[in-house]
Image 1 (cartoon, one colour):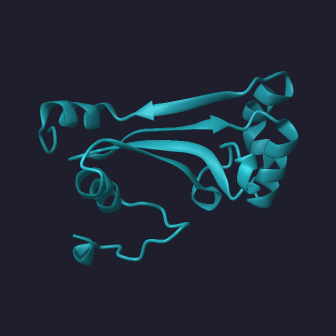
Image 2 (cartoon, helix red, strand yellow):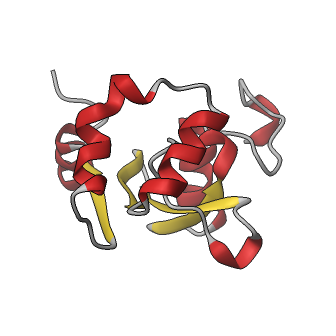
Length: 133
């Protein structure tokens, strides 16, 4: 029930909390659902901007499931070194702190993506339990 949310103000650019994710999966869609093209402002610098909207969003997605919220999160990574350096500059990140990551792009990269699956969340979802201790 959105009237009982701890964080009731949700608009474009708001980072979704578990209560929002669960509401989408359990109430709005009543099933697993993918949320994609997240606002750039709430995601990591290494996520690739979407060209279609001028970089307002990034090519990222989350798989939300009933009873859990986010089960899987993933994104396309920025493979262009010059764009990566520009993004780091915008966020006042020191490239020296990320030399190893930048070298991965400097010496050759291809368009690629990555994701993470929460194993404990998977177990709770598959088993239909609230938590594992």
